[in-house]
Length: 145
Image (cartoon, rainbow, N blue to C red; front, side, top):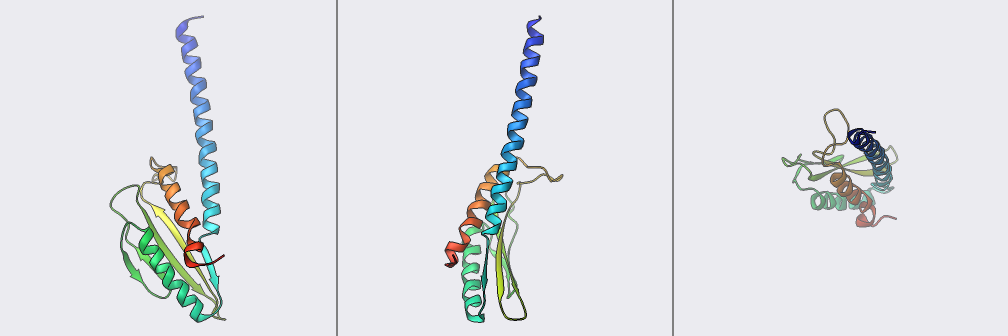
């Protein structure tokens, strides 16, 4: 057998393994991000407690975002999208039901994490790591269990 043919088969085999490994790693990271999203919210039942948690959330968003808060009211805290790629910015929402109970959630985002077609971008792993840390640490920062 020609050495070039053996080399071509070996390269094709390695490429297939590399692709399978990348797909598995992407899947594992997406599962970790989904887990982090479940930790990125808190519930409160009294107006005073919800206001306290919302104030702490605003501090958390300001500390975790590379860009400043551009809008903050009773239902949303928004930061500007960064001009640089790979930088995490965080937003928060507060939804309140008729009884006065609220759910406060944060969401980390990162420019360059995804390509225009929705596939993982070149900064996916770095962005995912930063977002996961921001979302996983939210409850402990605001003192929720």
